[in-house]
Length: 399
Ligand code: IPM
Ligand code: MN
Image (cartoon, rainbow, N blue to C red; front, side):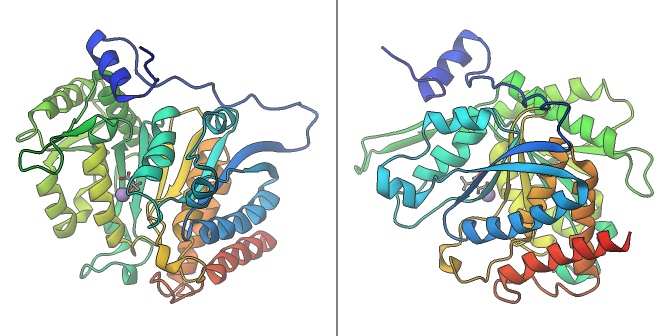
């Protein structure tokens, strides 16, 4: 019997025999090119996908043009045409050759996937989860940062109150792809989906949270940075592995305070007292859910960005929103989530100053009221892209 790598059976076998992680490791980010080159060149895969993906990516690239000219680096961009249209035309979701190409790149800038014409979950699993799994992007970094109080639906919360880094484990849990149904469409039907946690998978994301907290330093008024573990180990007993590994890793970071909340309570506290949270680490499914809640605290899905990251290797960056098919081609969707995700991408590939400046530029447009709202249609998608680009260029001119 041939067992496909990354298939449910391969994962189970890997778990049972205790061998290495079931998904193949990737090659590292390519070495810097010839020293004669005037500026650094990064290979970026551009995958707009479905729905609003195309327009939010187009606006982000407009901003990238400006920021790279200011910061003196270049990008070689390669279009990755995958998504609903490609699938309907060719029957192909995302082929192995695409992953092979991506492994040679520095990063992928991603729009969105999801189309009502196609079976629920098919493209999402093949493309989004496909990249997360096959490229082993085990860190899902989702910053929840408020740039202006007018963007927050909670009474009296200021930017200083809401600055949280969510770290969502990105390859395991209910997303491991082990599920099945038997006796379908009968009254005896049984449907199963496994929540998978490996020691390696759990430890590496928890360790990453402590590393980031150390790098970030304490929040204002606190002595130490803090990592909150969010789980549901009181009911999902398999998550006891998170409790134990978190305690073990924490011992190695005496400079970081620890905290714990069950996911239900964490949702409650996130609304009641978001200022409590600093760095939060959680499982794949809980991280998916709580970061939509977090997005609403900072202005909604139009501004919530994320990085799907394997530290030091090719990684993928996207807004956390979906494809919003009803807004496709209407020029109404906010591109800020993707633009800020591109900022996370710049930080990842080693252009930290450009990343910082991009974030500061978006923040200042919001703080000065030039970006009034992130509700679809309140500003045009193209207008927001141009605003960020023009503001970057204007700031550079002033220096
Ligand atoms: C996200 C999305 C995806 C997820 C879907 C589209 C599969 O909601 O990135 O948060 O559940 O991870
Ligand atoms: Mn989600």
